Image (cartoon, rainbow over all chains, first blue to last red; front, side, top):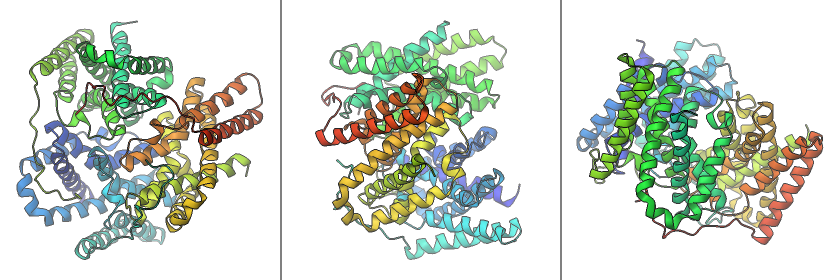
Length: 210
Length: 210
Length: 210
């Protein structure tokens, strides 16, 4: 198994744990935790593949992925109180997952032969849609749309990965560079609270509001 | 028309009525009730088919299904006050629908040639995703993730159906066994308030919360 | 570029602006505004294409559409306070978009060779699903399900467009008639507060409620 596949399996477990922990806070039952963990982990890739018409989906071809997501969700539920103590390790795994998902998403889109802009966008969708679906199922406005340098990290990772390859660099080296820079950027963003501007506008009247 | 097709039509009408009644409680207009009823009834199969890349979708090939869902939604809206009196009959139809959706979902996935684990999972998705989409449109955390033996009934139904066929039983007999056991399990779960464990954890701090 | 394509580009910009403004009211950051604007503008067509199995999706084949949606979202954020003053112009563009989306959706469904009822329905889905996804991401019950003659305008537009063609009229003339009648109907609905009946039923007990 290559390094990227290994990171991927660690990442889907980490994402599933994050989904299960948010599900616990919504008083979901055991099935709900396994379900939301799996959607969080595998939802990004599934949405990408449905947008591209790329079949079969990853987990349909590899049902063994479900063992990872369900196992991680159950483990997270069992260890939830302890889990918070390892928040640092968790954020690290989540950052690894974000950049790995991005690179994998770019690869699959590139194989599908789409425009280079769409390749980067599919990397982004792979990186963020799992968490976005998790938040929709937990009935909150998706965090990724509101704060944190999270989507931006995915975008930068994808741009570096695709850009270096367009510039003639070998795929393996471009991947390593993108993973390292993206991961470092995410860690720095957490450490220094980097964020994009928010347009505070609750007082702006909408056209379609209640 | 075979028995399963008849149950299916009854089931989509029952699901559409359940969607319309929840929509009324959100003050939806007539279009909204027809829309949410249809999504509740046909959403599970649609999500399954999009995940499998199985085209055309059922209601695209059979637009007459829409007459059932829209008719049931309008009838439910007109009779809502009376409808509650027949809650028992309603739960019975809903349980029939759950097991029928599951078996139909398994059939379509098996024809697509996917792994047996994915066959069971597609049965589950067919069974629960309509109600899940209904709850997302009604802006609440999906009930199926929180309580009741509902998803579990679908899983057990699928496992029995697929397992008996793997063990050599004819499809028709396996289907009958799965439908009967699944339906009985759902009725007993309602009667005796069976439920999966809930990990009450509102005090557990999440990693990604507000 | 033909007239319909021109209207389409204006329409996706207007929809993206409406999404961005609602995102601002949820305190989304710059990425969130661009994302929700793009989903609002392109989500309807994407859902239609995924339901039909019609690949590649419009924006995958034409990534330049994203420049329109992102540009409009950023412009709307920058000009939000002034934007409200041009609410009239905005509603006019939105109405143009609704009928243009509907006609384009009908065209793509008709090319896919589906039943005439599904052609009209795909026009409707193209017209309303962007706003529906916007509302789900903003954590509110979709406006289109609750009030206003909005979905109905899309339905009437599609029925006129398809009906006139079935009756032997040339496509161009049928399109013009549908666009004019649909647009006028939407304008009148806004002016005179036309709406479908709402079944106020908060006191009706549901079967599946909290």
